Image 1 (cartoon, rainbow, N blue to C red):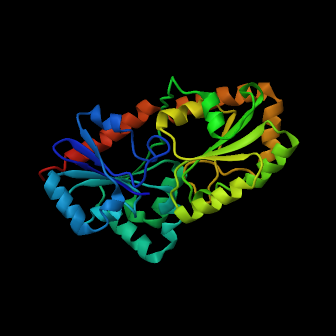
Image 2: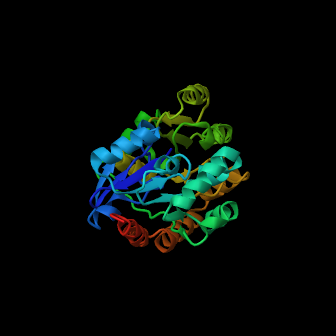
Image 3: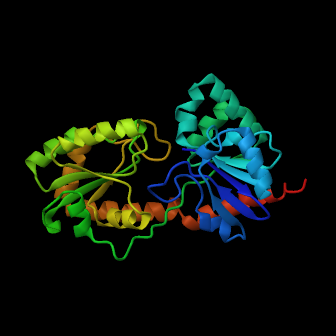
Length: 320
C-alpha cells in the first residue's frame, strides 16, 4: 500500500493503493482537509509508478503540494518535483523496508526533502530518528483518529447467513478478523486454534473479512478455510456494513507479521478469549476501557487539528 496527496489551489489529492477495508488506513480523514477548504481527490498510487507520470499529473492538475503515506512506496514518487510535501510513516517503512540498503537510502533522501513526517506512535518516531538522524525536528507523533459510520440498515442475520453460519444469533460468539488477504497479515495464524475451539463449543466462530489483495495467497486461504470447521471467509465489504459488523460481533482480532499500529496477538490468545466468553463483567470492563482509550488517545478532532496545521506548512511553500 502507498498513498500520495497533492494540493492544487487548496486541493488535496490522496492515492490509496487499494480499496481500504477500514477508514483511513494511515491517511488523515478526507473530511479533515475539506473542512480546511481543500478539495480532495483520490487516485491509486500504483497507477503512477514513474517520476514522469507523476510530473505529467502534477502539471495537468496544476498541483502545488503533496502528502504521502509510506515513506518509500509513496514518498519516493514525490522527490525532485519541486513541490512541498509531507509524509506519513507506514509500518512497512520501519519494520521491513528499512532493512533493505537501497530502500533505506531512498527513504533518507525523501526525508531530506519532506517538510514534515508523521509517525503514529512514539516508538515509530524513535525508530525513524535512529535511522535518519537528519530528520529530527520534523517528525511529529499523531495517533490515528477513530470514527465509525455503521449502516443503520445492516442485518446481522444476513451477515451470518452469508458467512454460512446457520445458528441463532442469540447464542453465538463471532470473532471478526478484518484484513486484506496477503501474507503479511497472516490471517491463517488463528485458524487451527478456532477450529479446535469450535469443535468443543459449536457456537464459537472466526470470520475473516477483507479483499483479495494477493491472488495466490487468497487461493491458499480459501482452500484452508474450506476444510476447517469454525472458520468462515467473506470478501470485501462496504465500509458502513463493515463498521456495523464490528459493532455486532463479540470481539475483533488482529493478526500481522509486521504491524506498526496494533499489538500482536498473544500466544495465550485462546485461553484469554475463552475467559472473555465466560466472564460478562470482564467483557463490559474491556469495552468501557476501550472506549475511554480511544476517546483519549485516538481523538478524531485531535487528528484533524494536527493535519490541518501540518498542511498549512505546505501551503506556505506554494509560490516560493
